[in-house]
Length: 113
Length: 116
Image (cartoon, rainbow over all chains, first blue to last red; front, side, top):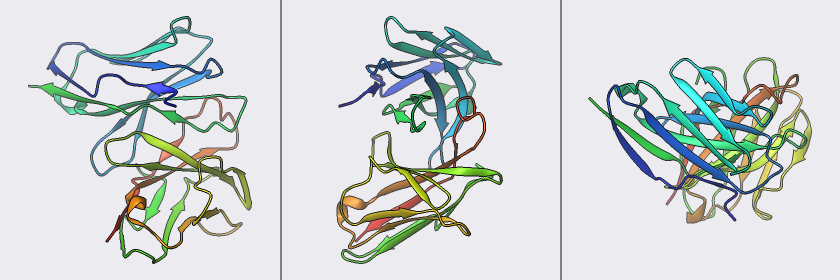
């Protein structure tokens, strides 16, 4: 039972353009969402998060949008840079519980120079 | 990923042996989570511990796997009588006691376990 889904295993984008990574979830109890970036042979690195009381959070080139009615979130990277090439995981949790994260299967982003 | 230290980075075991994975959380963090990543999959929650307590082990296999976080020293994930299906990357994450709802978990670089 995959509660968090990333339906695009890979995405290629030209340098300077926008990258949009998508994530869907099924559990309406999730109220905190995060995006992590992962390079090979390293651990996930936190990028940005959003609480369910918001619909948008911005940090530099990264913006996360949350659509609660659609149970959908997306990560926008503008402008995309070659160093952004990595696997991106979305994660969800319930802050009234133990804060364990439920991860999607990841999207491999390749930014072409 | 400075802060959360995992060792060893790579561990090779033969079927039937024991594997011990260690995790030292970031300074000031008292909550430790273990996740497992199988090839081509996302990370899956295994267990959540505070000092000397297992809080949530709902993701742990019922047999052969155990975890501890003693008062002194690192958290240990122990796998007894390893099988080929245990081959995976095991990640540890830590978070502070306060404001956990607004503080993301910080991950170590993982231990890659290979079973021969």
